[in-house]
Image (cartoon, rainbow, N blue to C red; front, side, top):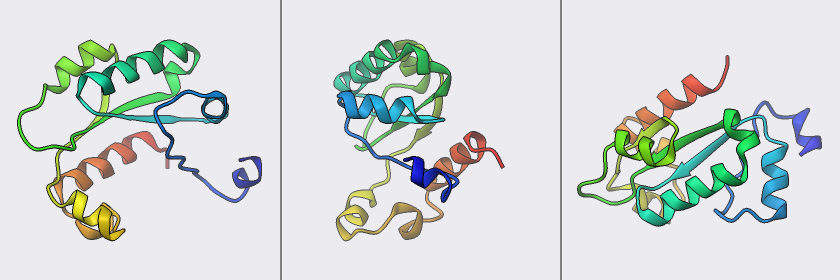
Length: 130
């Protein structure tokens, strides 16, 4: 990552939910972390565990819920009580997301005016300086 720092303003690393030594090293060197979670019990437990394992990074972590299925879901407020931190964003379900992913089309290009992309833009604008 050191080589990339001089070349890039931002580096995005999409990581699995496991906190192995490599993942911890990447997180430790990060200036800012966007932790994406779902609202199912497993995802919430993983989010809480990540916060417990990395308490020294709490100020650098923004938590985002990404809704991946249709239907009723817990409110953002109820999730915030569970994770004990405000949500930086609450990305709504987008029915066409899965088909775009299968085609290799980023959501921001395939559906730039969708509610999920608008929420993503709003979140990034508030989190990224400049």
